[in-house]
Length: 382
Image 1: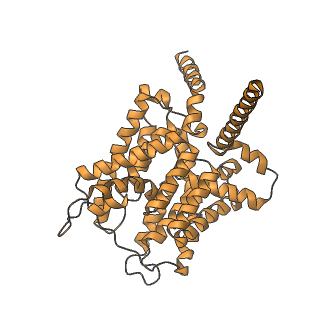
Image 2: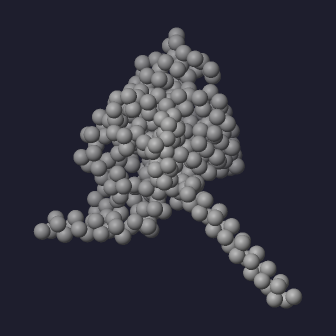
Image 3: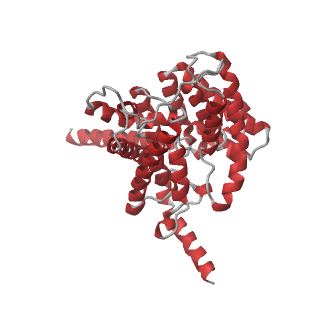
């Protein structure tokens, strides 16, 4: 009897262990870059391939490359605002299809590189439009702006590639500023809100609410996608975590740094509460966390990048706010580009742009990067 009970317990233990392994393997298949999915859809229909490319493009905004994470982010956008979700979907599809039609590099298209700028342009056009939701005429600049991003991305990539720099979201920042300059708050067809500088004095300002400031930290991650609702922002953070827990930590850390920077500069309370003070810090921190192999020094470097991005964002927002324009993500984009040009001992941790993967994967390949750097130094010495 005792032997039978012991055998049953061992079988139950093996069953639980086997189930745990299957769950873990399933999670591993759904995390990271999901490169195995590309092999599966290689011979599938064009519509399926386009959907996967588009979802990868959605996550490229946060330096990720996971279609499931892209699906979660799109779900968060539809949750926050169906109109914004629709604009984001049309933007990423318009830019991806333009890349296909114009014969852009198939590897870049499949990886979503031509989708994320178009998505950001469409989202920001919707956010800044003062015509309200479901204003169908807005689809015209959405399609045109998203398609134009492809040509800017291609041109900038060729120019920046000589320094091994990514085109990042330069096309988005350029297109959205040009659009807002071409229209204006009083435009008869495409009016937009006038932007108030974050450093503007608040008449009859109320006392700062600590809980609202803390709430603004996860909202800083959501504001990367122009999302200012807590629930959808947490879902976006969960999408980052699915791709890479380390990248999610950098996102929260960077948003926290950006919020602290806003407090130190006494920005408007609304900027702190809405997460607008945090999202450039989050992007700056994630950029270093994604393009450098994680170590103590690169982690501190990521925090420094977050501070630099947040302070630069306040300065640029105050400057551009004087003419009613937003600074968008110019601060984080410029700072991250400068950080990638870094020389010295930290440069040894820099990952070539075309070989960037999830931070956890980069850690596994650390020996290969170091071996490559050693060979380069030896050849240079010779």
